[in-house]
Image 1: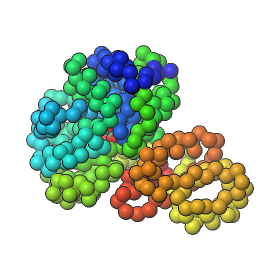
Image 2: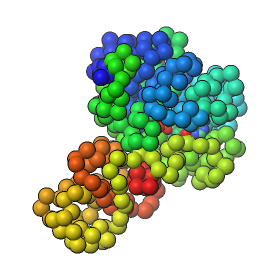
Image 3: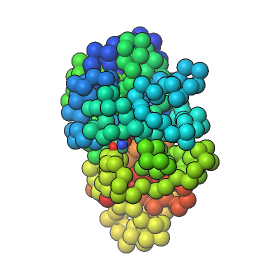
Length: 336
Ligand code: TXA
Ligand code: MG
């Protein structure tokens, strides 16, 4: 089993930073989801991430940075990036530290393995205090950026607690993986990703920071991604998938299907906002009406339903509107 340490203990942070500096793997809490972290500048450490996840090595990883000295983001990203457009700096000023990843032109000599062969690099400064403490402590030991994908095996549901990470990598020993337990992730779904390497902002992955907020902060319209956009695992059609099939339905057909099945629906778990009627013994979880709360619990609920012994998970399609974009996107991929 991986080693799980309470992140409230400063000794645990120091120990985790030393792991990173020595080329090891650390389960790192962030405000979005837990990351599987390694020194972005250490090619063999980064290969260890791809191997542990079972992720193709041409899928680029996000590199995490500690907060900028004096809030000067242009200086903070300069060691890793070539030209940084002004609109990207405005996005950093507005949303960093926070759940936003920016794709920027990469200096060819840095973090090539983490970038999965792209000539760009994904950067993010997390707002989670434990992530920031770890990134800052690691920097003092010579680690200048920490590559971290979500700490799940490839294609599976992202982890939002230390226990989820331990479950995903139960086969790894305490020497191979140290997990910092920083509690449940407050945002709950992965960062919004904006490609800033193509002259104007392009949304690659929706998240809790919405296109309207992005456009207001950077003064440019935000384009939707097209097929020219670089590969992103989180944008594969099927991703974030429980092992049990997930089906999305509107409330009315969902209720009708439950009515037809009656007590035979006991092999189905239901996650819905609408107050549905079900036969006794059918597992029913209520989805919050607030999209931020729905995002916060989404992956934990999917995991719980997945391991409850049911054979199907039926989910009510979330409402339209961009506040729900991130949750809707994750559910559509879980159902694909
Ligand atoms: O919230 C998050 O972003 C979490 C936490 C741990 O920071 N990380 C995360 O990483 O979700 P991951 O690897 O599961 O998803 C990162 C996405 C992938 O789809 C990857 O392909 C894309 O970011 N990405 C990273 N670098 C990129 C690049 N240079 N160009 C295009 N896409 C990139
Ligand atoms: Mg992921």
